[in-house]
Image (cartoon, rainbow, N blue to C red):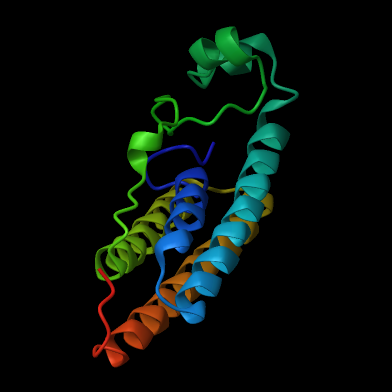
Length: 162
């Protein structure tokens, strides 16, 4: 449930943590806006996962390999990677170095997009495919916004930001 190293929880907490050390209002507001939006993405993913699992029979749970998760969480939403590894704060970075943090964020958005690409390759349910396509498009938009934020810092290169 969006709790892997490239998931929405990590993205949200990364951006909302990094915003405090940003040097200007453009970068602060970019990180705040995108970090908040990532929380909404987490809600969307949680809803999809819950809707897909809430009515599974015991046989379907076992056949899907969902039984170990089910034992600990039933069909509750618990932040973990697709491999079942629980979310950890070790997935995020916050260096208080504007250039390093924004480059980390650019990479994070591309990794999230790649994850959505992988989901789309496996999905066959239109009720999963359409919201995932939307989320994928938002990751691309976030990447563009982080690029703009990075350029705004580079354009102000006469100031010290680290």
